[in-house]
Picture: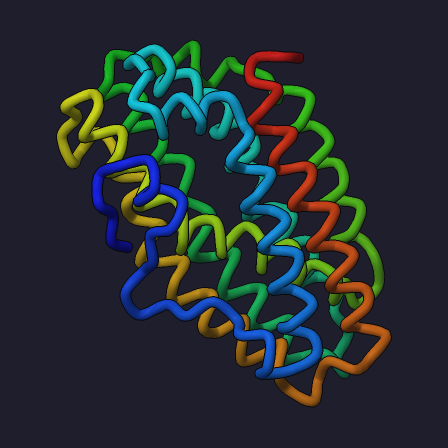
Length: 242
């Protein structure tokens, strides 16, 4: 993702190798593109992201963001694994994709923990933390969706969460570095997800444009994406509110 180092760069930066879904490619991706546009608009109003945009953040703010993200990140691979277990044999390809994704995600919290400690945070305090109101709502919703038979709607959640990593995380990492003078080993969690999630989104787009997704599945995916987008914004807004 490229950035000018200004607030405009944070909002409009792009990731090399990742192309967001284009409205004319397919009906489902057009609808998801609209969801993503609304998501970006809401993210721009999140207080800590506005402060980052303006260069008005401290190391304590960065620690606070990591602390709040960690509690939900731990659950990510768990609900993906649950979703995998609920796909039947007629959806074997989706089960396989979910299993592979859960395997890739299950160590993510360790990257975050290392960054948190590298900027002076206490690992014990981090691991003893509780989910904020938004994280509770997001995790609760995702475990509910993942527990459904053939939970194809979870693809909508992945569209939002992986898209966030691919398009935003690297920009945020560099902006924190610019403002706070952080080293690479202090923003590794966010920087890593720029490349890793760009690859994931390419795989996800292939699934979303396949004949595996019928009209009913598309409706479910879009609904889940919309809910997850709103809850993710809530998670970033309700920092430390438990």
